[in-house]
Image (tube, helix red, strand yellow):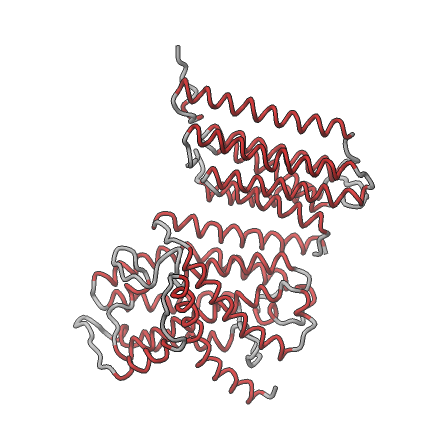
Length: 216
Length: 312
């Protein structure tokens, strides 16, 4: 099995996501997220000459700057303000959710093999597998974590998966739409971070398992 | 090379390299802590000294304790001859992956029995911890070797590690993942740093040292040598995995591969020494998490091996 550079980068990105599911330390999670976004920026930059779309290079730089640098720094700042370091998880222990993600990677492989793939260059089943597996891993992180900050991280991983799928499997979205999505993600993370901050202020914890108790 | 020369090279290798491996680990660790550290061949001097000492044994022992060190040593010699852990080795078929895994387990089984046989409470501590770790570390080892087996369509490790099989030549991702999985599992198997600190004899945490604590004299010398031989074999296997990940290695000559193999084992020892100097010992209940990472790597390797088979 020989991979092209795009496929190597995409698979490395989905490996960092799987390691994220296994790390209970929140700072480690943010570092992995940053690495993962840089890998996706790498995929974008490598695809730019193949698809002959120069603006993808601009997008790669913006992706690295906004999602790879500022979002992790902002979330880390929130984490320090709230004072949480670890997320022990609910339902599944973190090592087990990592193994679940590997199983889901296998499932997404079987799933993407049945997809009709466009016979363009750079559009192949390994990138599709990586993208679908990123979506699954994001879902697992969102479902099995206790601290509300992890839900944001899981959502960001899921968003990365959708981005990778759109980039590698379709003929691509117009530049303005991609820029708009980037802005949306930034604004979404800002709002969610401030929301967590307020939850912390009124409930004195951000444990999502305890948020179903209604309070007057 | 002719077979006689190969056997002779193997003999020299078995005498020189294992002490050097443990010596390099200790020296690296010492230099990182601003100490001079023992000479590189201190392990050999220790063995010679231990052989001159008389032996003290517990009153409760039976033949199990007496024969364990010899059994361990014999099993390790058989594995050293069978396993493809170095280039300078007579080429022998028959290193079946299940046989290899359970031969390692058999050696461990006898060490545990001997520790219980000696009747000391430390031995019992060590045995219980060792059984706990072995039960956890067995799946990653078997799965990572099985991934190689799936790739080459045979359970013979000699075929997987021979540079002739073309189906394994471009499987860099598979070899890399198997290498990472094996190096992490072997740190657990050898009860080295993130799991257990072999230099502190703290009875609350020690694993392997607790089991050999009742051995003395020549018995201890043989046990220690078997342990270091096991370490060398596992490090050699790790390096061979990483070597197979490099496509260039498939075109190089056997002599060059052999020399690189020796340097590689010493490099792995150097890396482990640096890691041990920097890492902190894990809390005991965090150990399953560490092994879980190893299991993840081997699961991914299996996935790539199976997936690669479907693509072809």
